[in-house]
Image (cartoon, rainbow, N blue to C red; front, top):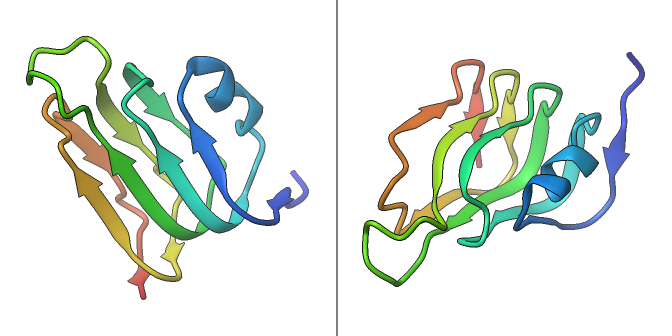
Length: 102
């Protein structure tokens, strides 16, 4: 599979946003996951991002609009930072290939 590079930032707020990024191997800017995305999020082709940010909901912890699983199994590099905030229902993060941050 050829590299698919997305120049700039990307935001995930729904399953259609996840589908649109399914073949992307690199995001040069920030990947933002907002509280409107609920359930599992899997991007198996993503290998590099500028930064990774998950913004949960400021609402109650049992809010249905929460990411529960973040699966980026082939992500090896985050150029800047990983930031997770108010991920009340986030029960699993798979970054097992991650080699460097910052």
